[in-house]
Image (cartoon, rainbow, N blue to C red; front, top):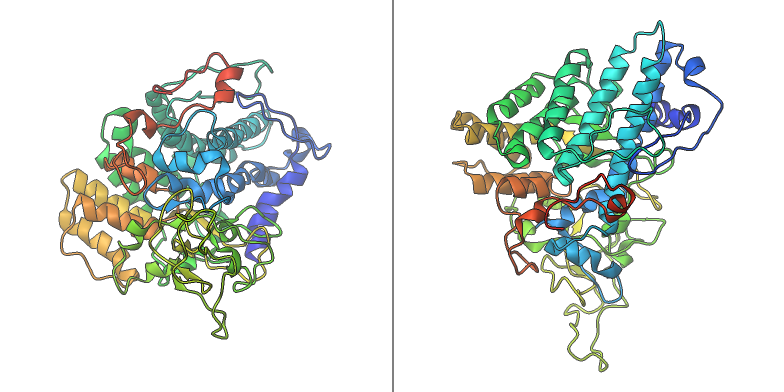
Length: 517
């Protein structure tokens, strides 16, 4: 029922109904026209406005679903993609992300820019169409789209910093927007969200599982304010705290079971503030199972597509978990067995090779043992090395895509953000500690006796690993540039921002490259 209501009705119908018009933008993207419906005859009925949102929201599927989404933590101390001989070299791109030596020509840099701006441009197009209607109350719909556009711009300010602010759809085909400063983008996001907040629905739960409502808007504000010192040089801890308060007044709570948030049907979770309802048939894009599982675990988990043996958990994060912390169960580790107890084996395990006598040898032989320790990032990481991301429970029968739901924002993060805002602003440390311990209690972890920046950052890692927040967290806590495993040098300050894609700079002389690139 969940997939029909959210993915099909609200999102997928739009791909058939709303293929009207094309977009001009700095991304040079175009939309396919799927039908002869026009804004005039489709949107004449205000009840139909909700269906138009789908094309703006389904863009999030590509943003978070492919390995680019979950792999966003791979440039931090959480995840990595080791080169296992001939596999996962990928031109050295994963090595550069790990060591923060990425360049403007990286595929990731261009893909994220294009995908995010496609979302911005789609919002612009729909707002333009809605505002052209006569006799229809479009304020709630336009407000929701403006909030979604602000969310896209939050991703842009966090990743790229200095980007064009584009709100017009009806522009010449050769229009080339100029770069706005990070401060200007910050001001735009804040102003947009504050203006539309009175018109956003306070309804939550299933109808708004994957849509921007008042609480999702407040979540974007909370993130914006929490990172304000990074973005603008001026801290906004009190504003971050108040935005968290607005969310905490809603009907949200922690789920008793942590992993309920990542299952195939998480739409009833009281923890979701904004989520994506993936479905391998009706809403396909999520590939975490293929990206992380060892080649020989395909049969164990009854996956119908070959698994890739890529994404792995770094040992330092594995070691953060205490005994009894149930969140550690999301790190697939140790010898692997089929349901009948038969060991899973890897016939291609690394043996002594006289042609390459210095290459590492799998000490466990054929039995597959996923070790927390990873012997190297490149070039000869053992096939078995690294815990794997099992946070999103593996679903038998999954093919290229899986049906796990994905939380963009959830309530546990709000509690941790509120605690951080209190701590940084000199607020009530007792309340801050209590909020963190609520999160730990759900996981079966012993309560902390005191709270400091180090153990709060560690708690955010334990709670939010593989959800894409680690980069901004590490930047905010001042540790992103530091040396760490397989990153032997302190990185220059400019890598806190990604470069503007090389292709965009070449196509638009009005764009300015971020400093250092």
